[in-house]
Amino acid sequence: MEPKTLLVQALERNVVPVLMQYNFVWSRSGMRFKRTRGDFTDEVKFHRSTLNQRGRCEFWSSWSVRSKAFRSWYRKVWSRAPTDDFNVATSDWLIPGWPRSGEGFLLTGDAAHDAKETTTLLRAAITLGIPFVDCHLTVLDGANFWLSRKARLDRAIDLLVMCGQTDRAKQLSEQRKYEVIQEGLADDTAWFSEFNRATSRYFT
Image (tube, rainbow, N blue to C red; front, side, top):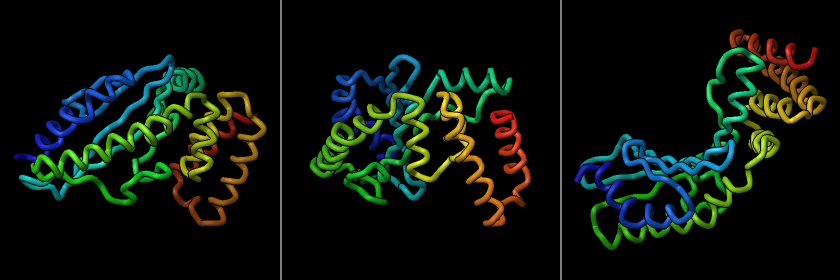
């Protein structure tokens, strides 16, 4: 059986019926679940290993919350759409307590084995994944998430400005500029120019 078929059948047999009870909508073509709550859309997307072969499918998931309000706000400020509208986004193994740290789930076509794998996935989704998206439903939650991960500080600054925490955003931008210069990353002129342009618009 082809890897995608293995994954679709396993998910639709064991995972889709349960996550639908949490108001997620399944898309077979997109290999993802979506759930909309107000301005926010939760998304669970499944990714397959490029090393898969017939009769074997290794896969993992990513979890995110998208913000329609952020996209609208950014367009008003910059007169263009952002590159994405993630309030938060993470691979599953970075969610604290996720059972497969740094490795994915494996389907082989063996019914007992695959049921065990999808049961482990479903338990993690209900006890860890869904609570993860549930606790990131404000713009400030998103800013604090990126700060805690020390990633996408430009997005953290955007979100802080959006929710009115301008002083905190300014302090963060000054810290980031210093780090960039110290690390010799200012040579990435496109990124650094864009970063300076953003902060000059926000803080002048």
